[in-house]
Length: 211
Ligand code: MHO
Image 1 (spheres, rainbow, N blue to C red):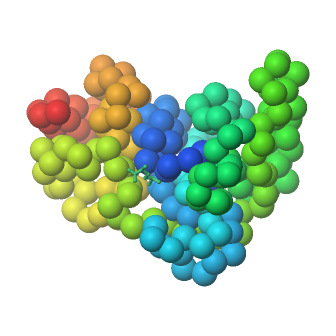
Image 2: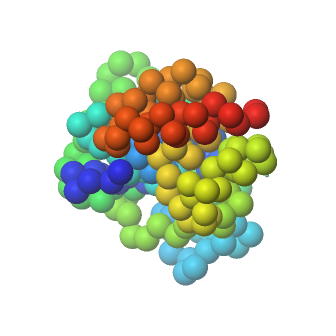
């Protein structure tokens, strides 16, 4: 469900499992993926991420959710002050932008939050050079704790890559972590630009999942 007006932003806020679930359940975010970014090490892995940070990259439809809203959720959901001396850069608070318009919005939201008394976040703001996708076992981590959900989703998303990229899997990962509920997801599915038969088929399928 990605259309040409979608944008992408990459955020670091500690261990990437939770932000995958947190942003995955936000309406307007159509894909989340976790990975390594912000450093210079070539081809990092979870065990050897070098000077990269754990990050979540998200595609979003700005007509439904703005970058401003995403950034407020970001700064309201981690402590951008004291995580930085722990594990080097792995858990760094980080925003990686794709273009000068995003950069301006990031600096504006940061300044607004300071005025509102939230303090100045010790967040690194930099242009994205490269996002390296993390191993499959880190994608949709909380959803993967539920074998029955994975079984039932398999016909819809036969490969690991399809599951990682799916909007539905992002929502269910948020559900598995407790950040949203089934009613909210079902309500949103009825707004998706697919036929009502397809909507009802998906809804029937996810209602049968044993959590
Ligand atoms: N303390 C967590 C960190 C994982 S996160 C992907 C754990 O190992 O359970 O950095």
